[in-house]
Length: 226
Length: 351
Image (tube, rainbow over all chains, first blue to last red):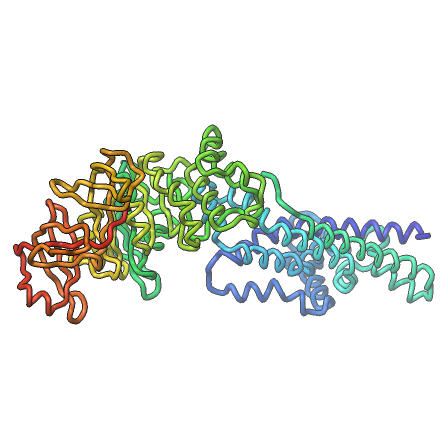
């Protein structure tokens, strides 16, 4: 069985992944839409920035976030000036780190989905009296539904497995910033292989089930009634 | 109901520079591919933003002088794309309802479902429909928006002859259903003759000429009269039927024409299509000829057609008729405007 501490870490990880995925869907959808439909100079620069977390070692990302969010960093100082605590070593700090870390995993599937839809159905909707928001929610979103499912799944799963960014940014405070991957690392460090097994196995099973359910469901998404 | 528009729109090397002034009824927008027909429709629908103005039935959709440009969804425009563009995430009924809910025409759903025979298709996904079925749904969907201007971008181009025959009757009835300007893009002269009362000829992004179909068909300075299938339309009235010969007699002014037996009542009015290549000219009435229809005609104009060949515009009972003659025959017969000839018509079909 999982110890209380391990269970706490697991729940914290799930909460972190859920909050991160939610924020990423809210931020990533307009960003992906904009990248597909807007024409502006320097679009390639923005796309490269969005894709950076794919290639950077998480420790690099975590290191710069630590500097930026810490009490001496620009954002940390701003937080202090506004009368709140810096985000490092807090759950909110982990959320900020995870959002950046998992950004491409949400934005890119959405970008692909919007690209695939193209302009044709949106133009048709416009000739049927649908305004821009109407077109987005009743045509683009349902046509991109597989993209949304993929984006949410990848964003969630990728955050579940986060290690480097959390370690740099959040440390290892049980109940506040200790996530499963770090708890496992601790167990292994302490040669406590049984506990490591339990936790690692749980994460493995959870991740597999999540992906399995999503892929199975994705195949069966049929006609959506208006 | 009328349309008045003028646009100037640049797209890379291509420039559209076109003005249109249309009454209600079907106007064919006719021209080679790449001449700007679809771009013109996109300008009218507001899908691109040209310079110029656009007024439909007294309502201004675009006026650069007043810095006015209505976005597509605020224009009462119906547009049927060549590829139908049904929504794949909705079934047929969902597609129709999409339009009806937004245009507040839910009460007309039943009528249009009946008009286009869509009842058996309502719960099919659009991806499973045939080309003809898709176009029928797209037409019904466009009509549900209660358009004041209907734009049809080659709605039959992707269909085979059988599917065309399936949809043509619906299109032919549109002017009665909706007395609004209908712009029908095509490069098929048969469709023009079947459907349109007026024609606008496009070439290289410009409107060459626009006007009533019968007038433009016989203008020798326009590309229509130079086509291999150049034709005229003759308005005729059914005089009587002779089933024993499998013939019907038709009246064209004081002249009589024979055609294969028609399923029209005596007194009915219809149009005959006569192709230029089916008309032969002679100075004397041919004796002992097998051609049934020989009519006295007057040469009105002659223009070169192809090397060694001319196209001749004739008048029969005030009605224009086109004929091809070789340059050699034109000289031999001394054909020139005002000359009296006999036109032998070998082929007639009801348009």
